[in-house]
Each structure stands twice: as C-alpha cells, then as structure tokens.
Length: 218
Ligand SMILES: [Zn+2]
Image 1 (cartoon, rainbow, N blue to C red):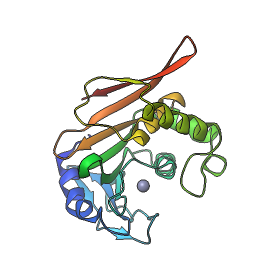
Image 2 (image 1 turned 90 degrees about the horizontal axis):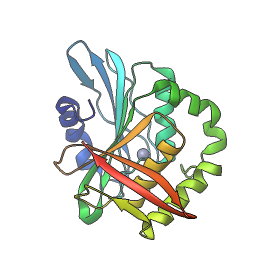
Image 3 (image 1 turned 90 degrees about the vertical axis):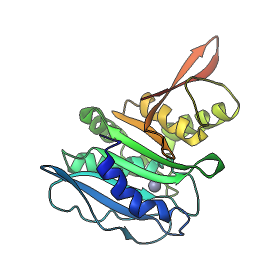
Image 4 (image 1 turned 60 degrees about the vertical axis):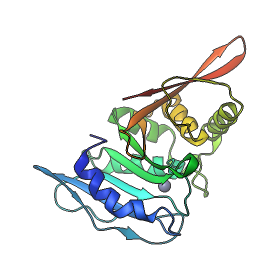
C-alpha cells in the first residue's frame, strides 16, 4: 500500500511545499476501518523531527521532508526510527521521506516492512546506540559497507536495468545495506508523478571484483 492515493495526497499537501524549508516537518498516519488518518504537520528544528502523535486507529506510517532542497534518501537515523516504530507498534508499516533528486525532481522514498521478525532480529543484533553516529549515519561494519557501496556506485561499478531516472548513490547504498543485513525492509522511490518502484541492490563478487546489481521493479 506504499502508493495508496489517500495517504499520498494528504502527505503531499503538507510535505511537498516544505522541501526548501530549513526545518523538517512530519506527519503520522493511522489506519481506521476504511480510512487513513493523517495528522497535522509538526516540526521542531533542522536536521531532526519528532513524528506527531497518531490519530485514532492503528499506527500505520509516518512521513517527513528533508530540508533545503536536499535529497530524500532516508538516513541511518530514519532506518532506526522505522525499526523503533516496528518494535513498538505491530501495525506499523511504512516510513516516507520527501526530498529533491537529480535536476530538482521531487523524490519520495518509502521504506516498507515486509518481514517484521527479520527487522526485529536486525535491531536486536545491531542496536542503534552502537551502530548509528550522531550525524545520523551508520557506523561500524554497516557504515563501512554503506560507504563502499557509495564509492562503487560513483565509480560506475554497477549493472542496472529499467532505470528511467538516475539514482542518488545513497539510495543504492541504502538498498544494498537493507538486503545485505536482511532487515526485512524494502526501499522504493517515486519520482515526480511516476508510481513507486522498488530499488533492489545487491553485490555480485566475481574474480575479486564487486559489482552492484540494481533492479527497479513495480
Ligand atoms: Zn530523514
């Protein structure tokens, strides 16, 4: 339900206009019988935001913008926020982030949980306090693998199919990390008015050379 039109239009109304703002704004989304209930936007200060309280219904999703026309690729801190919601709420499903892509396109990223047990196992093995830096980036072995993926992608060491719009290297690295550490989470991207497409990046090692295989699926 990442591309749910009701959620999308309600979040767009709040967050699309905020991407040039110096502050992050956020909404919470809960699900009642036949509708999704999107909260009013809340903000606190640049670089961090608290998701507003959930309205009536089951906690289901959250969305926020990145600031000053920066990209919308979820940070390591965003991954840990999603994991904490999954841990606290059995109905929590998706974390959305708004930002700017190449050439100023609007990109919306969605991290969606498809295996809750895998997500909680990861959180148990790699807790936030030892794997996330104060800059909201992954540290330790995860950080090393992430940085390597950014470098490999920027050096052109990848095969990609079905791309209609170039990727941010951070999006490729995040997808690779989600797969490599079996987090039970997919990363999808929506460019302008196109539908969400899932980015799946994995490493292929052959003869001592690593290549990132990237697929882009509906
Ligand atoms: Zn964020």
